[in-house]
Image 1 (cartoon, rainbow, N blue to C red):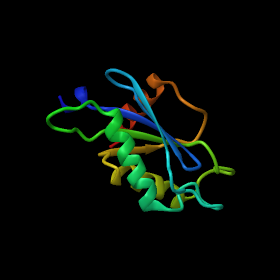
Image 2: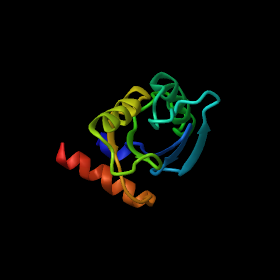
Image 3: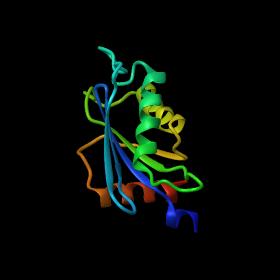
Image 4: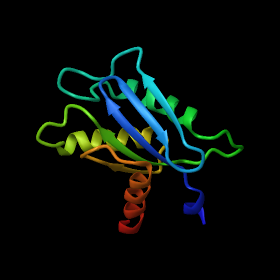
Length: 130
């Protein structure tokens, strides 16, 4: 029953910027540009605490205001600095970033941008694999 009402978010990560889209319920999008950079010359997320703070703030803006705040499922998608694929450390950073920002389930996506229905499907596949 919980999964029926689960909020699903699509988080696209660029240098010092998050685009957070709610893909279930009433769709909404929030773009968060960090006033202080969290990207470095070598890593998309080099300043972890700063990035986590900005992502948490954006997630709160996208989710509906309810008495009990539910933890979303997040598909996080790095759009830059992914030449030759992500290494284990980069995947771990992105996963931990979303978990620290309030997600209860995270999938990291590498590839072309997805439609909302594709995001829902990918997150559904994660549930079935778990």
